[in-house]
Image (cartoon, helix red, strand yellow):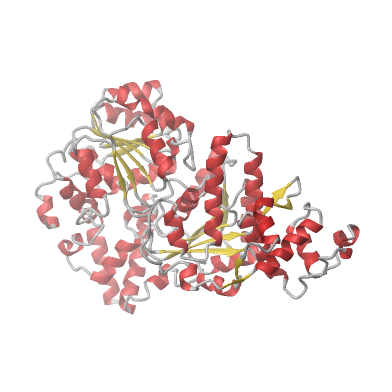
Length: 630
């Protein structure tokens, strides 16, 4: 059905207005609402199945990758069913972005959270009482507070959506205890269908979500987690800051996120990047609310910026044009890793993700897990996830395929766009090198770090070597024919396969006898990957800049795209909203490609719904006309 035909069936409602009334879409089909309101011709992936499930009043658990369109799964049925949609969301930034986006397409959305001014909160509550809110976003804490809960119980509710549902699971990578109280929702809102949504959850986490929400009969819908626009790479650490700046240089005028394992580290890295000329901000849980909000506002403004963050910066980041995500420390699980790299390329354009890792990272992670006070049953699960993450770094096969396997998905064939596919790994018989490294760890007393072991192997007379008389050992200099990077790679891979572990306050290396003994005795061959660092660096590059992703556009269309982006930025500043809330880059690209000359033609472009057509149609056509004439 065309845009013009849709307009005859759907009631008009300007963005943010209080006209039209709630339930105005109740007699409209979900597909018509999708087309006329959101500007999409049809559902994609499992969206249609999820919407149909909720429309029938049934519960659902929906797993879709970041950028896969999860919000459509509850926004459309919330409009098509009688009552108000209730969305439980963990972060203020996420709620504000969703509300801004819905208002742009003519939906009366609102969010109740702690940062609202008194008059704003009062207006929202008045709108609720008058039945003027189509969708309400609220945190679990605010939802279950007595005043809010009592007011909402007096409202007809069309659907309850639990976003970022992995937060409810003790096995989820961002567990939030307050989410557990959501099990009481059926008591307060009987017969209201619930849809839980997340981008990452393995089988154990899925089972825990369903149990915690008391949704035993929910339909579980799992889409493919494969993001073909993400170039996934993992590089052994060499010169960490040099590697980081090399990656960021490819995205000098774009948005990037750098993940670190500690608050102090984010501050150090952000300072170092600023000293080198980058616009870089640290973000972590220790910042004041004002500092966090200021950083988020700058990030959402659309300016080129590097956010150096802990995992406190993750969920709710809707900026679609993040072109690179870099990890300087190893995530604790494939789930956490996938969630974080999912912040890149939400607009579908090529983006890169790079994990920099070292043997010390692996050994340290295992050591702290061993020291954890968690029950043994939990530690076993945490250990299996950590080992899966370590295995992912050292895999010699398709890295994307190995990552998807962690979520129970089998990729037919290699992905063709990860580092190992682009630059196949060279392996060699490392049995002799492994025996030499393990022997040196043993002969030096199993209490020294990798750098000392390598010094002994290479016959390098350091103060520590001389002080401990290790230059008199039989292993002194037995590896002097190999470089330091070579031995670092051997040590790291022995740690990865569990032959070495970290012990003591200073993280000295010690043998794991069960794994190391067969190697030392020559009973087990060891195949190692050759760390061709330069080749691996190439694999992490690719043509990932959004400007290069658009290089296939003819020159005149590139000019149109640039002009549209400039117009969008000015409009966003005028409204004080993020530019991507108006149109994603992908929508502007399609407009530039198709060059519509009438409102009807513009209305057929994906992502241009009726409300945006009414608000921006004439301005967009004017930009196109002026650019072509110029």
